[in-house]
Image 1 (cartoon, helix red, strand yellow):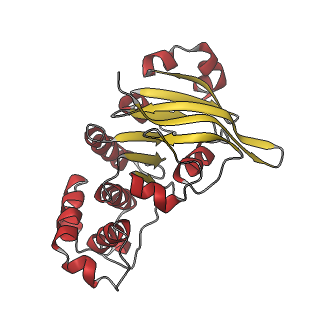
Image 2 (tube, one colour; image 1 turned 60 degrees about the vertical axis):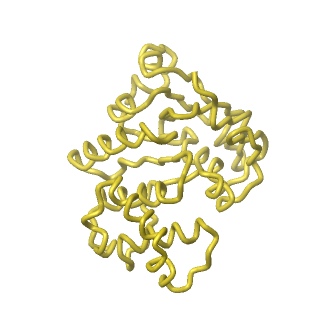
Image 3 (cartoon, one colour; image 1 turned 30 degrees about the vertical axis):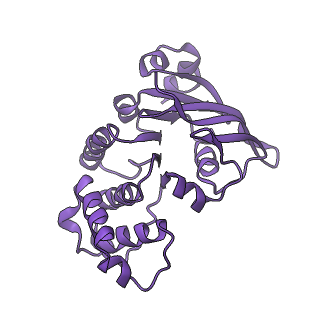
Length: 248
């Protein structure tokens, strides 16, 4: 059994009287895809924001590869190998697909943005960007402006950026959000390929995709993990059925 690459211990985050994370604990094992599901308002996005460093928990700890990262900012976590994609795409629409990836690589290496000349001329940056675009099947769109991409292609670009930054773990926040059937099927196929090479924490409402992709699933209700197990165990869990799956 793989060791945990990420451990969340008793994470609590309150907004006024609302506990968005309520003594939340979970482990993500290296080399697995771990899905987090739950009804709207369960605290999934708040959890992701704390893992990525956008929100500071009120109490509890976050450990990545055995290191306490609870107090680290987002950019420091990114350099340790944690990359996040968002519910709403966060790429730069006025630049090309290639430039978006190259600039992310440049920033990840701690270099300043000198326009984008360095990113385009550095052979190692070019090579990493090209490999990452090929991995998400966007190589033929390298010279296109991001503004010309479809919604699904922008999601692919976000994945290319995460891969290019040598991420050890991908935090995917509803990667299928807003997609039609064909784009969703394509993204599930792409994630099926990527999960062979990366540890993935997946937050997603599409239950068919979750049960296809996940090795383990945690169910959040009111900021608390009420169950964790294999897809088969979660399907058969009466508590989960009553709290979530039976009403989806």
